[in-house]
Image (cartoon, rainbow, N blue to C red):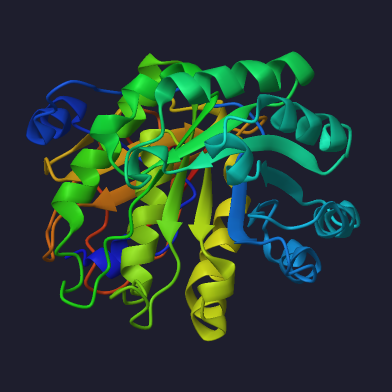
Length: 369
């Protein structure tokens, strides 16, 4: 039997087996994505605040390589100080453009902002707006953001522009105002039990990922990393966080951000978030290479998703397996390759995987569950 917790323990690879039945079960209405090609760098990062100047140093050794600090109305001195602090690390910055400039339609002010910081080595991309479809009393105009996007590109053609959304049915009108599509959904609330949110989250993530694919946008998923009854949220359990993390990798995300560092829990970060990041980083080269289309995996259960990735310059593989069930299940994987060894974590209640061909001793498959 495989419990969700055991299944998502850590994986050096992932599998989307029985692709047909899996996607049929999603019953997508408009968008669908299968095996998406990614490009480096695969980014892992925190949201934070521009005033927290010590954060780049604190998180740079924990596998974090991107920060999105809220700027609001802070002075150029504080922005410069945060960027300079990041320069001392390998961390890059997704730099937010002050929202007042955009809401006031101050295009010349936006251009001045871009000119001021575009040559700083820490700036990776521009964060155009935070949930424009949720702006009150009325959503921010897609035409306005397209105008601002054009102004940004006139000053800096080299860096991508990002927008983050909560409501996926409102994203498409903004497609011409971004290069990076981001989505934030925080499903772990005080009144929802562990994994009771999985079905909706899974279906919605596939839809937004498919939209990014169709519109040729990079996609960064924003995962819940806060709780303790803030905004009626609870911290995700370790199993829930791993599910969101690896499902995001499975569907084709180009990176993950976590909301948000100044609301996070030190003990939760140390026991859940950072260990997950650390285990995953070793397998990024395989993930970037993409699913091994020559060695497809079959799985006996339609609610199990699996993908197999080749580790570059080796004969080894990484397999990622995600269990969408809320209960323990028995299942069988069949790998259409001349397999060698299966290297993975096993416990007494996990059945050994049966393979389509005999063990030949030439390769290894490492599995993180």
